[in-house]
Image 1 (cartoon, rainbow, N blue to C red):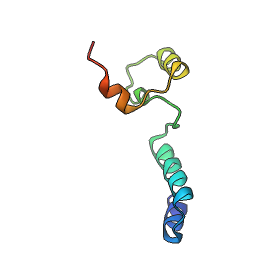
Image 2: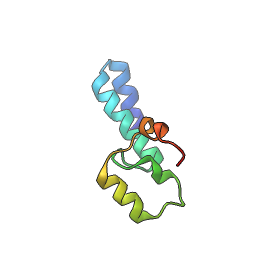
Image 3: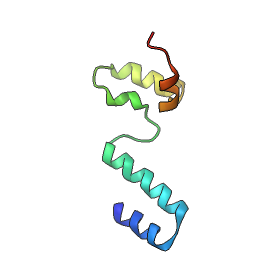
Length: 69
């Protein structure tokens, strides 16, 4: 995937390069783009993570805006 990303960059194809980079990041992090970023924390039960993912897509910007409570 990284090789494809480099090829797209060299040819100036911005849209395929953006999609390929997103795929590269998903493969590297072993996490799909539709999964909540909270999956990185191992202490959260799987059921809670699934409920969060069904309810809404939480972005990092949204998580930063939450209060500690």
